[in-house]
Image (tube, rainbow over the protein chains, first blue to last red):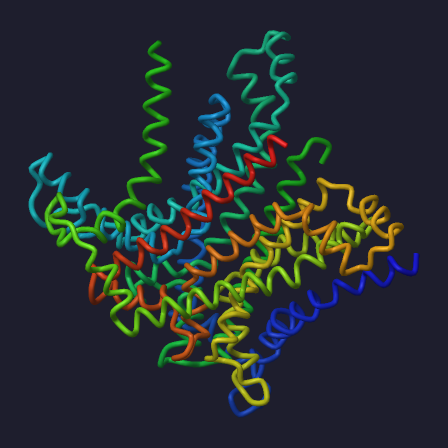
Length: 278
Length: 261
C-alpha cells in the first residue's frame, strides 16, 4: 500500500510543467489585463474591447466565421462519415486513415496548396476559365470570407468525418430494425430514431470544430495577411508586431477564453439535453 | 449496379479531396516552373536550396531539434502521469483525463502564445525569444496527444497485475518501467510520439509569436518564402507534407497491427 502511494508522486513532473508553463501564464494573463504598463489598476483594456470598432468587429467576425466554418465542416463531415461507415472494412479503414492526415498538417502548407490550386492564377482557376471561356480576370476567390471558410474545410470536414464515422459505427442497428418492424417509414425512422440518437455526437463534434475555429489564424494569415479582422489575429498583432500592446492583448485573450468557454458550455448543455434520459 | 458505380464515384471524389491539394506543393517542388495549367521540366534544385541556403538549413536543424525535444519532454511528463491516472480510482482520475482533453480547446495556440509572452518576457524569467520557449510551447500543444494515447494503451493491459507479479519477483520501480510497463504500452507511446513530432514540425502560430532570432523554424521560413519565392516555398511545404505522411503511415501501421493482436 505504501508503495502505491509513493508511486503517485510520479505525476509531479507533469503538474510542475503544466503549472509553471500553462496554468501560471494563463492566471498571469488575467491579472495583467487589469494593469496598465505603468502598473496602475485600470479597466481601460476591457472598455476598449466594447468601445473600439476594431475589436467589436473582430469579435463579430470571429463568431460569424467560426459558426459558418464549423457548420460547413460539421454538415459535410457528417455526410462523409455516414457514407464511409457503410463501406466495406478495408475501404473504410483506408478512407479513415486518409482523413486523419490533415490533423497533423501545417496550416501554412494547406494555405500554400490552395494558393497553387485556387489562387488568382491557380491551376484549377485556369482550367475553369479555359473550359467555360471566362475572361482572364475571373477566378474563384479563396481570399474572400467564403473562400477562407472553404479552405478551412480541408481541416474541418475530415475532423468531423472521423467523429461522425465513430458515432454511426456505434449506432444501435437493432433499434433501427425495431422501428422498421413496427411499420415506420424511412422518413419516420430517421426523424424519430436515427437523428435523435446521433444528435449528441453531432453537437459534441460541432463544439470541437467551433472551439478550434475561434482560435485559428495561421492559414488566414498566410492567405490574406492582416487584411481580415479576427479576434485571434488581433491578439497576434498585439503581441508580435510593431503595434505591440501587451495588456490589451491580455484583455483580448481573456475575452477569447471567455467566448470559447461560454460556447463550449452551451453546446455541452445542449448535448446533455439531447442524450436519452437527459 | 448503378448504386455501385455511384458509390465508387463518391469514393474517388473523397480521395481526390485530400490528395489533390496535398499533391500541389509536391508537384510544384519538382518542376522548373509552373505558370500555366501544366508544370514544366523536372528539377531537384528547390530541395537543394533548403540545404544550400544558410537560413533554410539552420531552420531545418532548429525544427528537427525542437520537434525531438518536444517529443521527449512530452513523453517524460506524460508516461508517468498516465501510469498514475490509470491507477487512480473514482472521480479524480476521470476529471483529470477530461481536463487534459479539454485543455487544447479552451487554450488554443494563440492563447498559449500570448500567455507565454506575457509571463516570460521580464527577468528573472526572460525565456521569451529563446529556443527553450519554442520547445516549451510545442510541448504544451503536443503533450495531450501523448498522454491520451499512452493512457489508452494502459487501459488495454492489466498493468496492476503485471506490476505486482514483477514486484513479487523483486523488480524495482525503474526495472518495472524498463522491462514490464514500457514494452507493454510502446504502441501508445509510438503513436503519441509520431503525432507530437508531426505537430511540432508544422507548427507556425505559437512559434511565430514566441520565437526570436534563435528559434526560426522551417514553417517560419515558409511563411516568408510564400511571399518571396514560391519555388523554395514549395520544397519546404513538400518536406513538411512528407513528415506528416510518414507519421501517418507509421500510425496506420501500428493501429492495424494492434487490432490484429
